[in-house]
Length: 188
Image 1 (cartoon, rainbow, N blue to C red):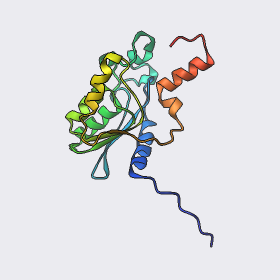
Image 2: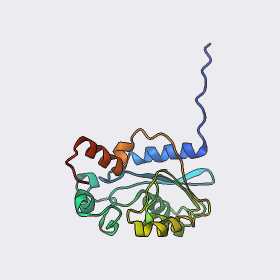
Image 3: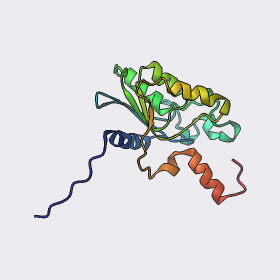
Image 4: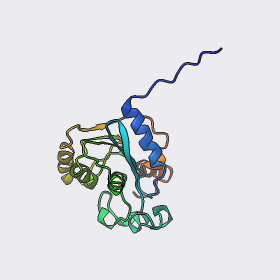
């Protein structure tokens, strides 16, 4: 009988981030594709990915004007005009829809939460955030306020640096860099 070496057991952070990556595969936003999960008492209580609300035409099929016409909008602005629901918002809303309390949970998300999602996570009493890909507010004048907001999570906002084989597909900034490399005449 051949003895097979077991695979190394992932840390809890790596395990949960891996699940957030799997959730992200459902995202249909034309911008960045994000997956998020909420974990409470070492159990996943909700998942979410970014895309249009249920019953709407999907973003990748033209359902969101902001995403369809990205060249008309500055990065990090006009989220109020975007019909896509962010992954972190969807996770909170899914929990609410099914009557699941999220107070005390940790959010694992494939991209660091934006300003709005950070506020909503704090208001829902989520105590910590773990992210894979970094995001900072594109307006330098708002970065300090954004960082100050994220400093309010009792269990901090921390990076979980695991491999992401689909990063170019998922992270719009990486796609933009790659497209500029292949087409130098393209203006970001």
